[in-house]
Image (cartoon, rainbow, N blue to C red; front, side, top):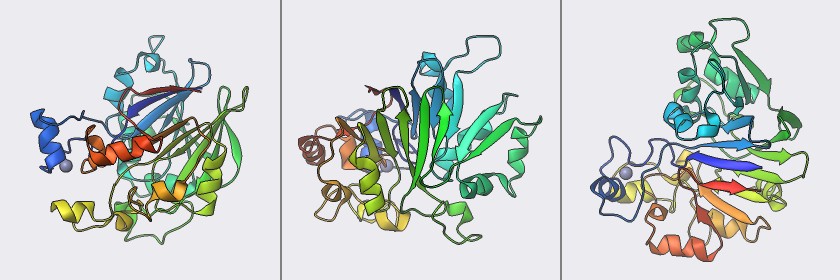
Length: 300
Ligand SMILES: [Zn+2]
């Protein structure tokens, strides 16, 4: 299985357009040991010909162009065989609307995420220009489904929350946020992709336990990261992201994993892990974790 990180930042990217926090200022000025990142999306393939995107970021066009295996092989063609959505956040779904150029798409999502994106959304009509422009495949919690050439997908519920734009109109549901286990059928290798996790539940721990590679929620280092920098009043948990650091952080909760590659992704621009020479970065490296960057590749 070949895995390519197309984008590794949380919503807003790094730097974020309206953010003047020390990280964003420093990366713009070139005074930090840090590199810019686009919003989270990963491409996965078993055969190198058919690719699956995990999430469709607002920067999808630039991300496709950045990786030649995703380029068309014929006048009208795309190697993107399917797109998997892990929740309904706009930084994971908005890219779908940018793939509107009369091309059939296959999208895997829970019914909740599909409805949140398609219902009462007048812009969705741009993906209804012809019959079957989008084929939706329902992810059911705990069920393994065929995904694309040589790959299967299983959705695992994770503590999460509704996207901000749906909070007022819906009650929370277990199908709002999932992690996925992508299995290569030929060799049995498993990628556990859990980019938004509000807490390490027994189901989450079990889903990561036997995986060969783990991508995990690296949004925030500390609970009060935004208030401490004066860039927001929400704590990590208010945004359904467990902080990584500290005795009760997700890194401590995850403990020992057998995966040969353990990678943090979906980094918020405030996260000290973005600074390659930060003490927090040294801490996660010492625990055997890597920090995802745009263009990172993993072969399983
Ligand atoms: Zn910032």
